[in-house]
Image (tube, rainbow, N blue to C red; front, side):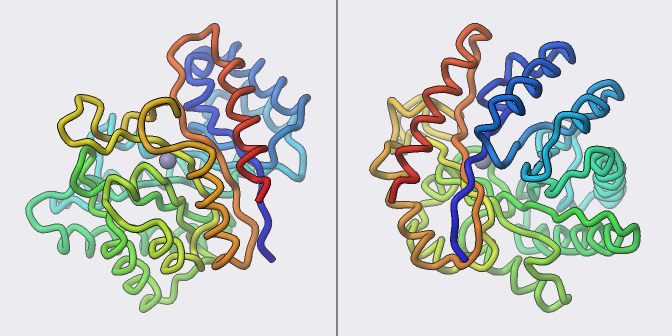
Length: 292
Ligand SMILES: [Zn+2]
């Protein structure tokens, strides 16, 4: 049955507080004490002390998602590159991250496909190969973690293989042919990426409904002549995202989706003193947006 779960993107909203393990410990203590969210999305927790602390705090109702998209990019690794050595390294990096993720019983591991090289369809096939190998490995190890694929923008900024609605549908078809479905991986539907790809929201949600388990309200400036054009995780002042837009997205989700979805706001805070201020604002935004 369709339902909405509030989620927080810790690594964006509280970003300045995620650098120091002591700050991060306080972040998790506060989040679990206030108990406002049923889902936490963040970077992979690797610090031993933090793992212990997180496991102590965590409640059964909280779903946990780690994104390693940024880590892969920073390490110059791609799951879809024609450079065979690099792709194998990327797969190994994912496996190591999954082992770490299991220490805090994470539910989803978020990845992206990597940048388009010369031939996007070849890159797509290689990404399917990578996912296939990783998901087989997850099954073999009995980790019970699902991959969360976030289609990024294909043309505007990060130029990822997956991608537009067309490329995302191709990915799903290829994976279905290999026997993989929503029991093994899900999609994170991000409004900024969909808008930058110039895909229609309703068509996108309708086509991907079986796989959308996460929604990010993310904003972007869509005017190509503007310096801010692209995927910059900006606040909701300039750009297309507002309460009306967020509500419309959830109404469309309600129309086509038959399972619970986790919903969060993707805004990157830079000022360490305003992190909790932003969290409050976005919590209110989520509350109002969910009132559909
Ligand atoms: Zn996102």
